[in-house]
Amino acid sequence: MPLPRLATRYLTTADVAERYRTAASTVRYWRHIGYGPKGIKVGRRVLYTEAALARFEQQLEDGSAA
Image 1 (cartoon, rainbow, N blue to C red):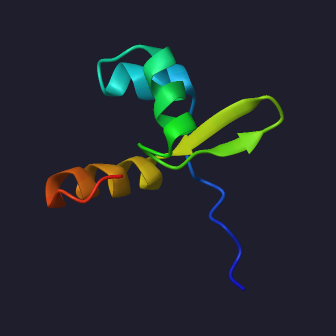
Image 2: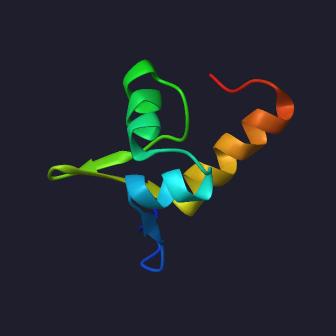
């Protein structure tokens, strides 16, 4: 199994909300209903990779986001 890249940038819920011009509570709601970019839980925080956001944006363009 290959090791993960160390240069991966992680964004917080607030960062994601700013990127999509919405409230952090909306991003938390998306996570609750299974919509939006996939995040990972690190302690009490949920972090999102740039790659996860890119996949979500591609799904939006394809019309298959859920």
